[in-house]
Structure formats: structure tokens, C-alpha cells
Length: 376
Image 1 (cartoon, rainbow, N blue to C red):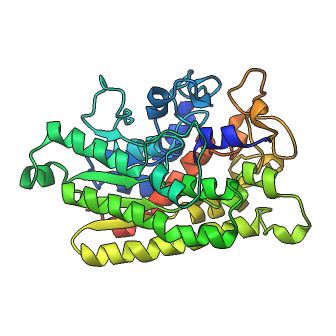
Image 2: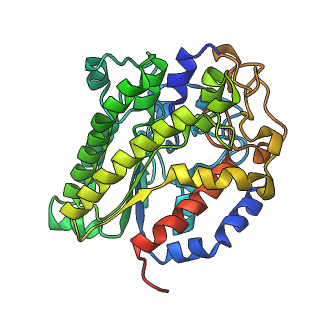
């Protein structure tokens, strides 16, 4: 989800312990058998490892306390530390991915093209549908990121068989992408029916981008869906007033989780179509929605604070620690919780490092049967 998109519009512990916990999971040991030698990541702030710093140096994720739980400094990651893509790389036995815009970086093991606040559709296409985004939103939509991939490949391989051979053992992750398109529509006061009508356009933008990377030579592809946005503190802060009937069993907003599910169902149908077009490729749906739905009821048994499950760790104001742009994480004087590992949400929009760890573990476990990695 795009930090700068929300920020402009709304008025409103040890790494070794983490690493050992993750690497002890049997699914993650099996994941290494896939022997991926590179990861290419696309998407938005759930995946950006620093491109936003080069696009917008004044963004909150380039300032403390972002990144301090692991890196001891901000890196542009929209979390207190590691992201899902970082854990994915660790599970694959690869280094963390460098952002594409950091030109002096080492891209030997893949590239991160994701940019915080980016959309799946172009800003122009959204504007044509009367959906405007924050002025701070960077124009690095999914198609732009795929253009970057094409530029990268010009120096990496020759088009055709050479590229296909060199990308044979690479993993491509197409997001999460599309969440910010929906956020822009929600924050632009579009009705649920209007947003549902936008879903095919968002999904088709993701499918078009995926078909392009297939033409480059991609063989192993993960296409993540949307999170249960009704559980995000920022949505709860904006839309959570009302009687108890608007909440589900996890105290999330039913209306917005149904919207996320509608989007995910449409995406899954299009993924099945893509798989029929490409029967010899491994194309997997990344079920972020059910990963979080799995985590929420179990979170207290995994060390998260029951009273803070739906509250931002970094932020101030209201029942969810999301009280307005001037009180948003990364701005002067905005408080941070004592122990981010007890929170699922870092800043009201993005997960904490600890939440990212558990969600990634669930995702890998869920995807392994389709990835069908060879035995050791």
C-alpha cells in the first residue's frame, strides 16, 4: 500500500531470533530446493526496498524510525525492518534485493522494481476514469516497472533463447500491485459499486504486465492478491464508526474485506486463464488475504499484543493510532510503540517486520505444492 498516497490525503528484536524462527520452518527449507538464483520483484510499498527514496527523497519511509528494527536506519522500506520480499530472498538463500534505481547496486541475484505509492494502472488511465491520486504519488506504475525490467535485460541477455535460459531459474513476483488503485478510488469517495467496476481494469493491467514478463522469458511467477483492507488501521480509523454489525469476528470492516475478496476472486480467474495460455509455466496466486486471516486469530499465541492487533505501532491519535497526516509515522514528535514485534501494523498501512515474517511463511507453505520444487 502506498504510504505517500495515504499521507497526503488523510486528515486523520533481535534479527537472529527472527531469522532462526523463520529458517526452522520445514516449508522454508523445502522452498530452498526450488534453487532460484534470482528474484525479480514488482509492486508497491509492500515490496519496495528503496526505489521510493530515489523517486521522492522527502517521503516518510526515508526517515526514522522506518527501518530501525533491523537496518538501524531508514532504507525506504515501509516498515520497521524487513519486508516480505526480504524474507522470501532469505528463504531462497539469496541476498536482499537492491532497488533498481540504485544504479551502483549489485543485481547479480535479482532486482527490485517495486515503488511505494505506485499503481497497477497508469495515472493517466485512472484519471480517465475520474480517479485522482495524491500529488506525491510517483508515476512508476506497473507498466513503467516492466519497462525498467526490459532496460535491465538489454545488459543481461540477448532477446530470445539466451534470455529464456538465463531466466529459467528466476522467480518473478508481480506485486502486490493494484492495492493503491483501489485505495485511490476509496479515498476519492467512489461507491463500492464504482470500485467493483474498476476491478477488471486493474486486473487486466496486472495481466498485461505479466504477459510481457513471460515474453521476456519468465517461467516461475507469483501474482499476489490484495490484503484484507478492512483490517488495516487506516481504514478502521476512517470508516470504523458505527454499530457492531459493520465488523467481522476479527473486528475488521466487513464491507471493505468483501471488496478485497471481490478483487481477489477476479484476479484468480484471470490467473487461471493465464495458466491455460501457458501450461508449461509455474504461475501461482499469492494469497495475502488468507495469510493475514490465518494470522489474526493466532497472533496472541505468537507473541503479539491482543489489545494492539489492529493499532499502528508508529502513529498517534484515535483508537487505532492513526490520527491525521501531521501525526503520521516518520514526522517529528510522532511516537513509536515500545515493542514493534507485538504489533501487526507498523504505521497503520504497512505490516511490521514480525508480521511480514509470519505472512511470508504462510505464503510459501501455501504456494509450495504448485511451485513443485524438486526434492533435495
